[in-house]
Image (tube, rainbow, N blue to C red; front, side):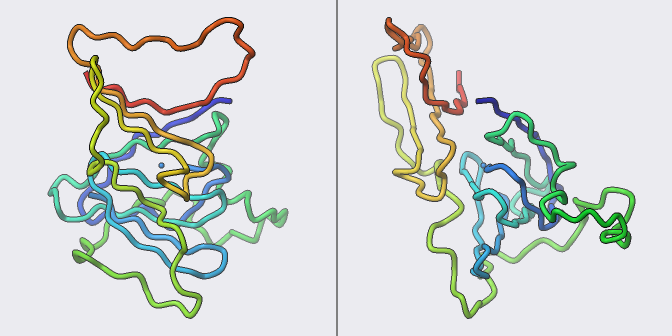
Length: 197
């Protein structure tokens, strides 16, 4: 398995247009609507997570909490991920189908700063059953002799079904021990690790 990542910065109020990816992903305002028309909106702070199932359209907007906007790292569970494949999800062979879309990229554009505590539009289908965001910044780390760790997977963040996170803090002078033991059977779990030294 391989992974891909993008470092993205949005100025205050700027919006990352409604879009989706063919792969899973994960203060920025996160909005989405699932395939059943259920709405979702949430604000995430530094250290928090979001995840969208493949094919779920979503947008990202920097709030006004910081005049410089927001900056975040996007992780994709497919190392071959490319933004160029976003519209290929339509499976349309007609080259004129999207002729009205500007030739130059407008996927990030300025806008007014969203209000605090904004609510999702009311939908007759309701809201998504599982949150697409997870407040990792508020989780207490498990203290260990050499530092601490926070682990998030589908048992703690049910929407995140294809990727997990381990935030490991290594104390000065400590070392993370490799737990792989012989015989190695070629299997492993893939975890995104944000190392804080």
